[in-house]
Image (cartoon, one colour):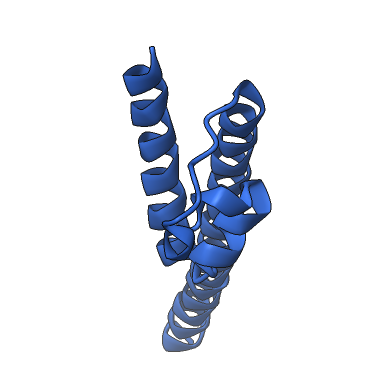
Length: 103
């Protein structure tokens, strides 16, 4: 049971570490907000693996994942809007060329 809980904690901590790296966030600050004993620099403290800690880790992973998705969507929307505007500008250029070339 304890080993299974520890694996869950390690999985969550690894996910938080990866998400923080992608998002440019401070991993240690984020993990301390979940539970101070999870900070690796406090290795002399025992690690808390309560249901509450597991829940907070899960919430943190979900929250960081949502933030990552929001940021990806913003980039995609900006790219789409630029591409859309470039497409319309190109169509106008083609129309102008066709219109004035035929005269």
